[in-house]
Image 1 (cartoon, rainbow, N blue to C red):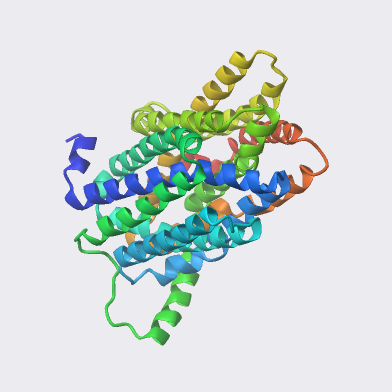
Image 2 (cartoon, rainbow, N blue to C red; image 1 turned 45 degrees about the horizontal axis):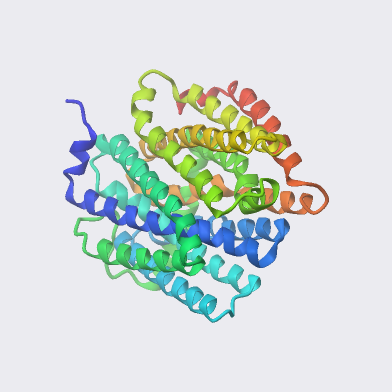
Length: 414
């Protein structure tokens, strides 16, 4: 019997988790544009925005492997609710300081680091909780629907962000984010299901010892399962390809293109819209195209996108700049949407359920490992040269790199 999206939607726990995730993603995407605009407005420095992006990735890399092992035998629902509640409090504090005109870049960096610290615990908990809401034969459809609805909310949020900033300012985006965190925490707390790998009344000392053993086992597991390691390394390279855009997005739109928050929203909307299409298309594309060929295509398109970004400021016609930016961003979004579902579903298919939380934490750490280093490097380079050559060089490197990776034998197993 063929399983469709309607079948996974009928699962009550999955459905409520999906809706909560959609609300959280909506708030995050609105705040993402507002934060980027606010940070560049405070500093006017490409180096500082690159440093902020790099520092924000450190909790994922340093703490998430430990976090995944630590939460292995703890209720994932409690972890998610706690993390979302803490992020609600932090965002409320930032909004208060912003409205009192007391925000400064250093303090904002500290707060966003804390936000990402909580996210480092939430991500492996969320991965495991999602798996608990689904039978194994529905993983691919469940992950695909989760990714596509997340992208839909991202599309709506990024589209609204420019309008909100123009209407009420950055404080409006911060309010939407804190409200989303609160609603998400309340909804997840109301979901009832039997969680896997949860142990009651474990002494603290025993739990710490168990955590270290589980993390060690998770590392050995990742090294032993070479296909999972290859997926993580490939995800790391794809993330690195997005570093120039993530680091310089506001500077690129405001500086290189002389655009407004509306254009920044348009760029994000195009990527999000493409992500929706890509996430929905993946199960059908997977029937005709192997994951190896799909990953090669994603890498080449990502490289080409960076080259287009480098070339667009030299186009004289403003209309063609908009068409080129939004069109290429849409194509990038489609490929990234496919890539996200590919990596998530392939990872879940290759990892046994009892290793899922600790392996997903290590996977995320590996996938993000190079991002801070590359972000610091491109930030430093941006002090001595324009950001456009950085986009161009990245594009050339990634096209050549993924053509080379096509020859790796383990790529056939993904």
